[in-house]
Amino acid sequence: MDPAGTARNPTLWQAGVVIALAALTMTALAVPVLRGAPLWMADFQVYHEVARAVFDGVPLYELQVDTAALTGVAFTYPPFAAVMFTPLSWLPAGLGEVLWTYTCLLSLGVLLWVSLGLAGVKARNRRLRLVALGTVVAPLLTPVLMNLMLGQVNIFIVLLVLLDFSPLMPARWRGLLIGIAAGVKLTPLIFVGYLLCTGRRMSALRATAAFAGTIAVGFLVLPRESGAYWLQGLILDTGRVTDISAVVNQSLPGLFARLAGTTTAPGWWLPVCLVVVLLGLLAARWAHGLGHDLAGVLVAAFTGLAVAPISWPHHAIWIVPVLAWLSVVTWRTKSTVPKFVLAGVTLWWLVPVYWLLAPDRATPDLAPGDHLVIALTGYLAVTALAVALLPVWLPRVQTAASEPGVNRSM
Image 1 (cartoon, rainbow, N blue to C red):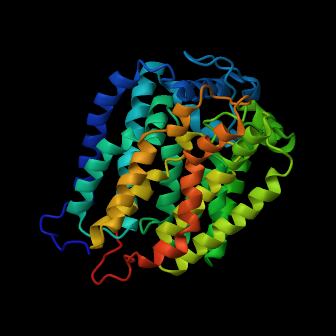
Image 2: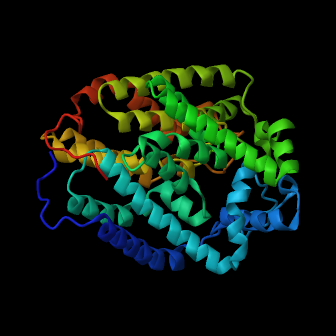
């Protein structure tokens, strides 16, 4: 149970200042270290060029961006994302990179704050200490590190979704942030299914309406690009992104492509993934029924990552709320098992073993045994194991709602 040490609890404003200063400190440390990396701001450079292209009238989906490490990088997000990126065109690239890094780290701190609140941490002073610790440790995790290095948007996407499930979001508006997040990247659409499975039909309807609104905004601002993306099949063209058999693609379609020795997934990947979606949402619904809404959200999130055509390591920012939740479980129970689980999961996501084992990003020439080792040391294996054993371990976890005096406010 959360200690009752509520004396000298910081206000939300004071907590916000501390989080902002922690993010500023980490930015000052991270930028000089990461700036020399070959992939430094590779995706941010695409966003920046896309923002300029919107104003210049350049066809977005014909744009080929050359970065320091990659050439001919295409823009693959929905048109609404391009609209959201337009303010980047007002900034010089160098300044934009620093501000983007700071905003990512600031959002990471808020993400930790919201995650711990959803996990039932009552005292703001304790939550703030955990956020400060997490702001230092989380950037070492492979997904967070890759987000910061590439200048990716995934921290913002995860934060929008979690805010939608938090008490900070008024009940009459819930679902809207999920729909907006899906307008930038499609993967949050899995949460519409989760909302429906857990009986929150109005939230699911608002999420769907908000997503439809992002499509409408895209057609209003970028009609040509919207027509190409939504009506002419660009949304289905995963080949514009990369060869999905790359080892760093930790999705089921990527695994199937590697096993088949091809650069595209076999034709049966879709029905298999639909079954996985159904099973994942049923598991998430079961977790929600036990009073573990955050666990249900996380199961849905990793189900979405598993079935997406492409799931890069930096898509798995969801490991941050997972570790925040596991930290709370460790703190509440007298058993030492959660501590070992927390340590093991942290280590698993600190060291990308599957990546180190592969001689190259694409692996069509590897033997089946090599593919198996890579699969077992990747994110899919640990996700499948955790969800499969859900009936064994989740009932043993004490819910925040069951604890007397736990305040779920932010």
